[in-house]
Length: 405
Image 1 (cartoon, rainbow, N blue to C red):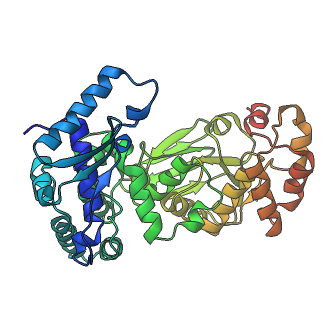
Image 2: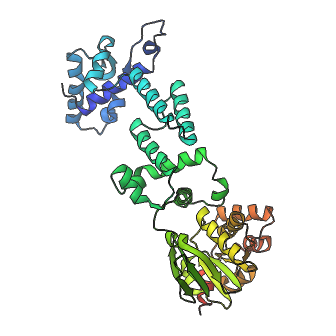
C-alpha cells in the first residue's frame, strides 16, 4: 500500500504517541487510546480560507485509513475532530511506514556508540558516553546515527591530523563532497570539540562564530584556505640546502610547509611589528622595522613561529599594530599570552583617536563590555577609557595610509 504524505504524517504521529506511552513501556494500568487532531496533520483543515477541494481530499485520505481499519475517526457536525489509532493495528503501522520500532532503534543506537568507544580516544569516548547517557534517560541522541557516523569519522581523522589540510580537501576525502563539511558538519564538529576540550583562552574576545570555528579547526591543522605568513623588512631566511633568501621592503608570503624548511630566520631590523590587517601590512613602512602579518587571532602554529623568531633574534623590540578598538586590544593580549613575548601597542593610543576623529565609529554595546573587561584587568586602561568616554573606535587602515613609504 502506498501512503500519501498526510497519511504518513498521521501514522507517524500516532506511533510517536504510542512509543511515549506507558502502554509501550508495559507499565500501564489502564487501557490507553492514542489520538491526534486533524489540524496536527494539516493545519489548514480548520482555516476559513482553506480550499474546499483540498479539505475534501484531506478527509478522503483520512477516511480511507478508517475503511481499512487502521484508524477510527470521531466527527462532530460532519467535521473530523479526532483521529484514533486502532491499537491492534499498531504493529502494521511500522511495516507500512518502513519505520523501525523504538526498542530496536534504541538497541541500534547503543550498539553504535559502544562500537565507536572502542577507538579509546578520550574525546570520542566522552562524546559516546554522553550519548549513551541520553539514551538511558529516554532521550534521543544529539544527532541521528547517520549524522553521528559522519561526525565521528571526521573527529577520528582530525584528532590525529599532523599535516596542513584544507576544509574542502577534508570534505571530499571523508564525505565525498567538497562542500558538505562547510554546509553540514563544520559547526557541529566545532561544538563537540569545544564541549570536550578547553578553548576558552584562545576564544576570549572572539565574538564571530565563523572566526571561532576557524580558530578551533586550525588547532588541528584544518584550514579554510592555505595558511600563509607574510613578511617584509630586512631579514635573511636560511634553508637546509644552503639557500639564503634576502627580504627587504617588498612583502613575501611564506606557506606553513615552507616555514618548516627554514633552519634560521635572521631579522636585521631593530623592531618587529605584527600587523592585524593585510591592507595596513602592505601600506605601513617605517624605518628599522620588520613586519609580520598573521591574520586576525593566531593559532598555536603561528604563535610558535613568533616564538621561534624571538628565540633566534634576542634583544629585539616587539610591537603590535592593530585596530584601535576593544577587539584590537584583545588580539594584542592574545598574542602576549600565547607567545610570552612582551608586545607593546604601536599607534594604538588616544592621540591617534584624536588625530583621526573624523574617521572614528561609535562603539557597539559588545565593544563597551570588552573595553570594561580589559580596564578591570588594568590592560590599556588609558586608551580604552578614552574610547568609552568619547564613544569612539578606529580602524587601523586610515593610520597606515598616511604612513606608506
